[in-house]
Length: 157
Image (cartoon, rainbow, N blue to C red; front, side, top):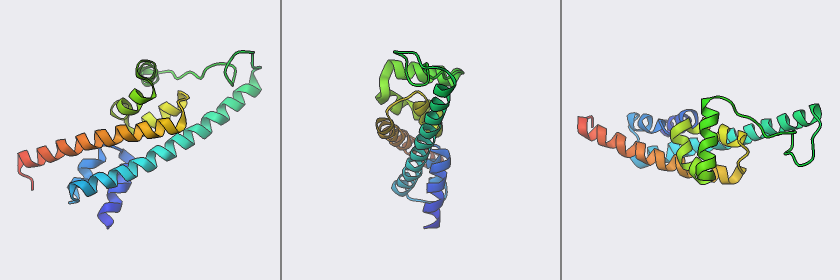
């Protein structure tokens, strides 16, 4: 039971890369996958809701600081996300939408990063959580299969 808890905690902290950790502490592959997915779900929920709360506070602060013109979004203008990760996230969302961001995001930005970036970009909260969880499940399964293949190839079991 303690190993399962460690795998859940690793899934919360690391996301998808925690699958090999779950296997390394001698959990069965399906159990390691479930533990990491539970941890990643907690990660996604806490990151999306915390980032959403911060985004709301920021938009309120901006709207009080600058007058809102008619026809503009709350806060006076669209929130900007500068930097390479922000620009890449905006391109993924513009090209593939929430579904594509949810599937590709965990591989490009990690679990925490994709949850925070998706919220900062203003994507719908529950659609973002659902599709990010689908993406995390896909990438955790890929990581599990790759880890199992490497363990078998090197004869570590």
